[in-house]
Image 1: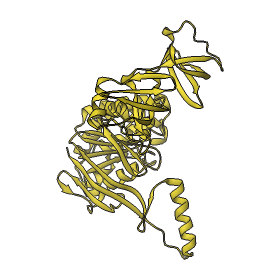
Image 2: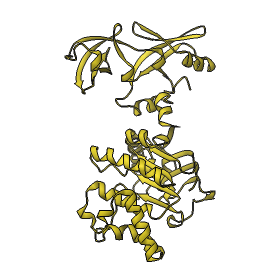
Image 3: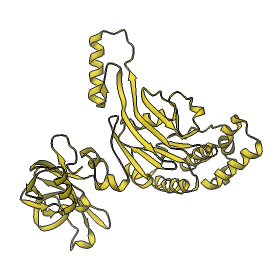
Image 4: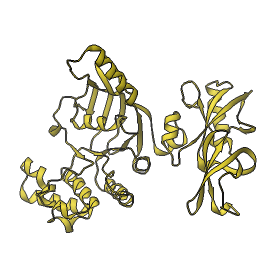
Length: 394
């Protein structure tokens, strides 16, 4: 339906006017900077900075990151609910910076459903079409089609209070579908649902995406949603893009320590280690254990002429194996997860997690204080710079 381009997008919230002294204002800004880690300039607080993204027609893009990273602000700028402080927003070839929200041909689904309580489901879904002045027969047809897609036909004559949370969210999505928008914006639409219902609604959104030919931009703080829904995901922190890529790309090749720690559950183990270059070969040393890096990793490091140096080593819990030789650790907590055991261990003061399939164990009865040894292959080691926290391969 539409290509969306965000070019050097910036959002600055000006300092609030106050009659207090300049000294007090300075202290106030400093405190805000300490808490949020956002940039503070003379203009104000920079909520989004240098955001660049080209979204293809009918692509499903997910903006993901912790609370306060600027993802919802970015979505609201696309919707026209927030002014754009700098850069260009282009939809379907047209610059939209100053175009009113109602003229952008965008539909948005909010976290809190935002349904009219006094209207039936049918009336809620038809409301925007009535405002446009569409014929009654056409409105009825669009509502019936959307209700069938979302499996809510049986609820059309009920009011929102008679529906569950998942059913209300379906109605909110249906209200957006009937408009047949160029761009579909979704702002954490599943965050108010319980875990089981979230899983069901994720599946519903995947089905929905295959049935309506629309560009999706989806905001969430839940990495599981990001990884399962998105064609590409945009990882944000403190108003800036950290990495853009397919779910597999950001999982396999995190650009920096933040992405490595944010993507993956449980999160990646981090260790202080040493990268050693010997001619055209690299290995990583963790305590008395040495792992030679894979051919692919070695080629990337050689291309950047990376030298021996202290590094932060990242290894995902599922890539760590118990062994007779390797790194010594002490068990802190053992979590039985059915098909696997999550071992929380201490490695010279550093916490780490080892995921062990129960089929590989003679006994899964680990106790606090037990001594274990683990190792890992050089093909699963992620090497990050101590200076700027970036992945040295990329």
